Every structure is written in structure tokens, then in C-alpha cells.
Image (spheres, rainbow, N blue to C red):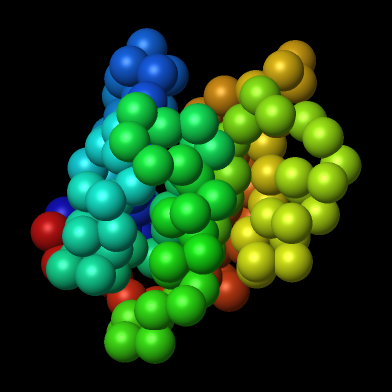
Length: 138
């Protein structure tokens, strides 16, 4: 099939996770490593499989997205620094400022009318050339 950019989705809402997994499965440029609903499992996958993109919700079944992002940022042993996309219904300026200060690349509000995997895929395609170049041979 060729080279694909590895992607991890960290989302506790199963319908949203299913929608994203189904959408990205149809895009030849991306390989969805997994969808998980907790910070601990997500961090393990990030360490073991080095996704180029991590899409993470703030509210998770176990842990939270901010804690996960802090762990990613402070991990000195990652071969790449993944592109971090946050999807959230939390819209406070203070949280958004904290996320951007941590190094989040983009925040998509779940309350936005165009929210969904399509808008995120459009953004990722726009920045594809600047993504970490760890790819998987499929």
C-alpha cells in the first residue's frame, strides 16, 4: 500500500471514536494505530509505536488529556515529537491558553458546526509536509 502517517486517537466517547476510525480508515495517507479511551494506554502506545499525530480529547475515561499532553511533552525519550490535536467541548480561554503553552498544534471545539474527522483531516493534509516523518510501511 505504501507509506502512511501513523495516527492515534484518544477519545472516550465511543460514537465519536467510531466515526473518526471509520473516516481515517478510508484515507490512504493515514494509518490509525488505535483508538483508546484512557491516558495511560495512550501514553504506552505513544512510547511503543511513535505516532506522528495524536488526536486527544480533554475528558477521558481514565486520566485526562492535559495530563497525557504533559507526559508527552516531558518525555525526553520519544524518537519524534508528535503533532498534537485536541478535540474538546471545553471552550474556556484559560484551558486553551494552557494547551497552546504545552505545545498543542491545534484545538478543535466539539461545539463547532463543522466539527468532525473531515475538518481535522483537511487540517492535517494542509500541514502534512511539516509532520514528523516517522511513517509505517503497510
